[in-house]
Length: 140
Image (cartoon, rainbow, N blue to C red; front, side, top):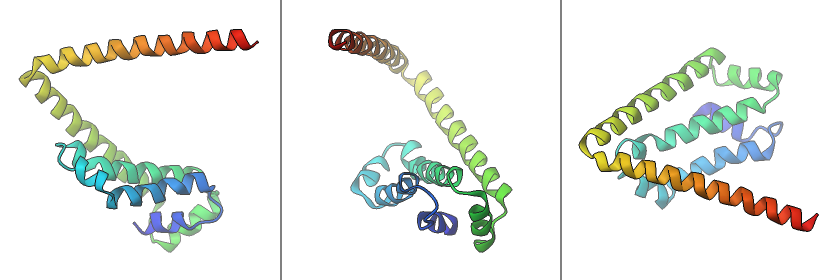
């Protein structure tokens, strides 16, 4: 948390990437977060994933000398942060995979609905590409 606070106020990081940190805080205190909490598994890990993503975004766009100074100021070893992020990613993947497998065995219709939604997404994507192509060719 100390690192995310320091990154949020670091002027060398572009505002776009610091905005992810601000948006994460807004999400955590917003009513939308409380609505998501009732969703099993996802509701409990969504803010952690969002925070880790926003920290990673800020770190990737922070100059190395500034980042080294920030690591020292919060007494954090750079490798520890990467280990923490990969551990959280693995835990989230394992828990969501287990939840999906459980849903799939208990409700086979969910799997079929997922296939239908995937098909609808592909059709919509193809339609969008064709419309964009037609509009571009008409304006050219």
